[in-house]
Length: 126
Image (cartoon, rainbow, N blue to C red; front, side, top):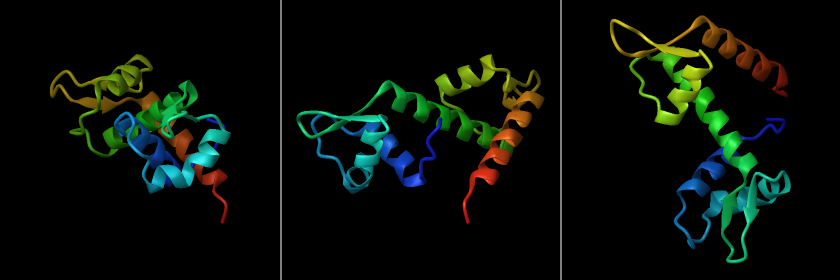
């Protein structure tokens, strides 16, 4: 993820995945479409709608994984979606606690979160 996307741009990507086929894009999508098309995260179709590119799907999935990791760190009762839980489990960022059966964040996951937070803190412009 070389692009620093705003919360609004991530929201537009999320909304594109939920938009019914052939439906007109809402204001959030329209407002952010020029930049998202420019950095090739979405593609403009002939009928006026938008679709996520492979890069857009990857960026959105990474964000969902980071958000899931933060949620598990804050609340072990949080339930992750299937693909996110599978990916984080394969990368050894979370594991299932044998006694409670809930997802818990591992030391590797905590280290990854700390690295993400440090990167985010250093890249913020005031």
